[in-house]
Length: 86
Image 1 (cartoon, rainbow, N blue to C red):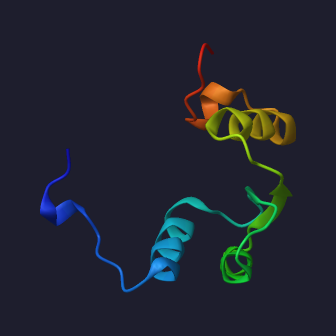
Image 2 (cartoon, rainbow, N blue to C red):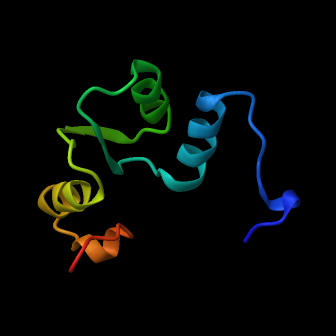
């Protein structure tokens, strides 16, 4: 559980996305995004020199984990995505 001092307050979704990108994305990183992503999100990723990779993800976390594994070769468990029975 987080305390009030550990929860960042943002002025909107884009500021939150910027914070996450700044903390996690490194130049040259491939970032898997939903096929129909908000254009502003893609632009923000490019500002971090990250490479957006579009994927059709309609079936929740299990599908997301499968796409991550297929596109990166990283096992689903390594991507910190919980899957049923796996």
